[in-house]
Amino acid sequence: MNIKENIKTLVIKKPLKLDCGKTINNFPLAYETYGSLNKNKDNAILVFHALTGDQFVTGINPVTKKDGWWSYAVGPNKSIDTNKYFVICANVIGGCMGSFGPSHKNPDTNKIYGTDFPVITINDMVNAQVSLLDHFEIKKLFSVVGGSMGGMQVLQFISNYPDKANTVVPIACTSNHSAQNIAFNELGRQAIASDHNWSDGKYLSNNTLPDKGLSVARMAAHITYLSKKGLQEKFGRKLQERDALKFGFDADFQIESYLRYQGSVFVDRFDANSYLYITRAMDYFDLVKQFDGNLSNAFKKTKAKFFIISFTSDWLYPTQENKDIVIALNAIGADVGFVEIKSDKGHDSFLLDVPDFLKTLKNFLDKSYSER
Amino acid sequence: MKTEYKIITDLIEEKTRVLDVGCDDGTLMESLKKDKNVDARGIEISKDKVQICVSKGLTVIEGNAELDLKQFPNDSFDYVVLGQTLQAFVNPEIVIKELLRVGKKAIITIPNFGHWKVRLNLLIKGTMPITESLPNDWYNTPNIHMCTIKDFVKFSKIINFKIFKSLALTNKNISNINNSNLFYKNLFAELGIFLIEK
View 1 (cartoon, each protein chain N blue to C red):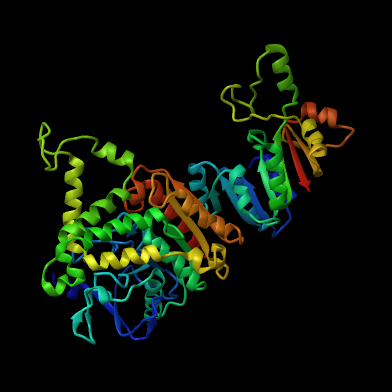
View 2: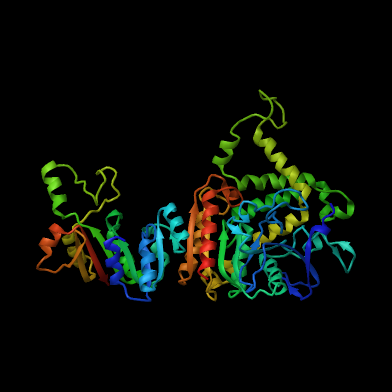
């Protein structure tokens, strides 16, 4: 995969002290931008991607040749209107689309890091990305927006940099990972680790890829992104290109075939070790604990306007967990709006064509921008 | 704009913090922002209406007053407004106490069940009254705790809150309610509007 030529990279020279205690410097941060920065430099939106996303938010992803992960929401005249806003998105550190991650070579040993890569956190990801503001000479972003793990980064960002954004839009996320969230991530990690080809994380040096393990991890995770009702309506008990059960272990049902497909296409674009590192970062995320059990304190220093969105059928980051953030903000009199969007599409709703969501996001951003 | 909203807007002082409980499509909040320069927040139970409010640039959270008022600290607003919904709550006493905990003052409006049309309706037809402001049948009405203006005044003594100002709305005309005209206002007013304090 010759990806380098399509990837813009900022080399961050400033040392970054990670939560694990290690310090990194001179590391690459891959990013992409859409739209143009205005004269006052006050129309920038920093979008944060979720677990398996990357910097290619919209249009055709030059590496995968598929639509960007948030093509429904970002683009000309869309919710995040690139005719109006300058959209920046970076690949998280620990990722595999050009930013510093476990598939990079350790300059000290000249070997691929693998699991020798330092464990990173949501806090580290955000602290790396703030360098983009200096790079574009942006004093204050118009907005920080993200769903799922992107939403966690949004929360961490405004907590770390209370004056750096006018509006804050965390979508379908949480202020700390629940036991259930951690459990599903552990299932994915164990699937990867139990693939013989994983070789304790040294597969890139051995030229063997843990495709089976990564694919199972993706299949399990994919189920958590959908709702029971959505699955039932789309697949039910429909059979896959056959009229009757075959009394074997092939993919008899369409849902089996669908999941296998999702798993197989995922391994072409994602690195197994990155999957371990990023899920770990999500599990470690606990903004409540960072502020000694009082989430309100995370937001005490900011005057930003918050808008929080959840989805009725999202059982991975359910409405109540989103609402806990609303409650913490109301407790300190912050400017916070909240809506739960009705959708059968589960946690994935924020990535899909859900008109009520897309319209509400657009209305919030455009109205806030015109009143800024 | 509804006369009711105009009256509420008049009762509210400039540059204050106001929470509109059951803010509907945000019409009152818009008027408060425009005319009184207030910092207005809303709670609304209907998703569609929250989305309308967002499109108007209003700060609204989707929620239920009975469950969601408790997230606000004491005295976090100068005024809390509750328009024509007190009668829909399971426990109006708790709601009023919550309004007066969260707000320094509260403005409550109630559709008057003592209005002569309502009384006549029941007297003559012998069925639960259906009027312009109370259009539902008994079995599908959200209004489970209807009261009259007189009931509300009595209620203030029972659960111990002060009525600072009480106004009656009759055919778009606004008038004061006092002890001596309570009987007539209770018969002719469609709506009672009360500014209350702890």
